Image 1 (tube, helix red, strand yellow):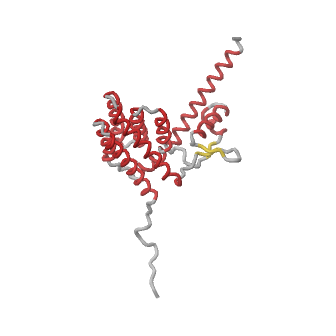
Image 2: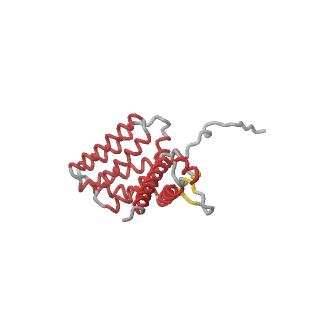
Image 3: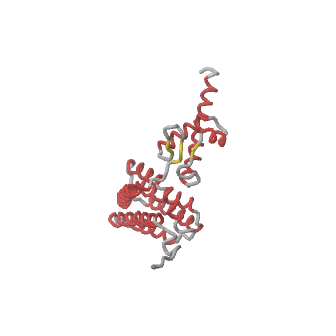
Length: 241
């Protein structure tokens, strides 16, 4: 290899690492709702923010588009993907079916080591819940469900489950926001019931608990969307003449 080729290879590796860094940063900010749905993502501004050229920024945005987290408009401008509430019922259907399957299978195939991993993830979730740390709770919740999914030992469902959990992270922020800073510690109970049924290797009960968990979260989220603050009082009083 010539001396001139070595710097080019090193530069390409550095550029790839830069794109990865930008991708991870923007992805986290979108999933945590630090970047709001519909917020514009300007290549020039991002390039300046990260101190890099536009090339790694563009590469990161392409990856985010593949993840469904950003959209590119016909005029080539890029926006944070909106939260499409119209798709929420079908999202819940998919999440429900995948979690029911993986949880039932996990109950059948689990080992003592699997149970330790699941319990560790639940402990992380509990600690985050006790501290009221929503971003940590969401991350720990994902780890908990992925630990169960990995116990099911089906790489195809594992891949799909990971995508569904990531797609739902922004909605989980709204779900936890619905408690207005007073998140009840009782919400850990759903996880505890799932762990108990997996430990007992009761597949039917595990599937039932997973289904109830998705239903409970989905119902609370829909209540939050339907919340109105003006329905309990009248602004005007009407008098019949």
